[in-house]
Length: 428
Image (cartoon, rainbow, N blue to C red):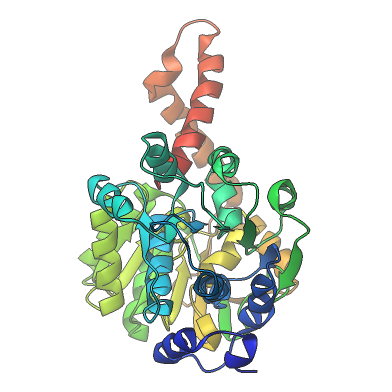
């Protein structure tokens, strides 16, 4: 099937051709006609499947056919969980709309709001945003949703993981009742289904690939070793394999910084991105990685969500995620759009439980390798005891836990809730 048969106008077809697209991907082929019909859509789409074009192209088509009679109101709102994903979507929207009279912009936190406010005052048709900054500017009177016709929740599962549910509900309450809703998610958890049921109107279900599958051309391999040997093994794999453009996932921000510094000492150019980095630093690191100036990008799950790096050859799980679905998201950064790629996981004995969860989710066993000189000898109980000791020491040294009486417990619960909310708002 061709894009022309999907019912898109010549201007959009011209933009698609300029992007190098020849035939629609499965998600595009299934979603575009339904969106053009005006249906609400609940779509399951893995990363790298072309889902952004799947919801952007039909929205733009409908905006061409029915132009606004008002001065550039916000007609389409696209909500995303992270700054990087929001910026990437804006780039795609601009590319697809380059031959039509559509204005688009992005707003997110971590940068000065004044330039965003000035652009909003000039009028915008398509707004891409993270929830926190969007609500801030709306509360200040700079954003009106009175003419909004389309709402897209992209990477909805990650938005819930990051604690954005309350903000999403606030946004939904501000939008006109009559609108078209599109929800795209890599996984369909109970919470996602509950959210979809709260605002989608008789949606059509669109599934391009089975839930929680990984790209067919991604080679997945586990390297078993000791916990303390992980860094040395990563350096060996990168240097001896002469790997370029390697995306490495760590579980924590501190871990990302520490690994990046060790790679630099090993003469491997590296940069770290995570929630504590300024937006300028994150943008610079990603640009350096895409251009080849930075060989290795070390990232946490939150910062890496939405990264679009064409033909990325290698993804390394320095630490496995404790949620199996996150493994699918991580390795989905490679093997995009039909390309091949390698996903390597460096696994210590305390992560075997995570391996079993991932294999159960995938429905298959992962190939396991032990390199000479990196044979695993760690004892699981020793590692668990050390973790418990470190946790206890941290708790004793944390001033927040020194409150007298019963306040400590209550404050701990309150602080935990606040931290969860801040985790989401950190990507404003």
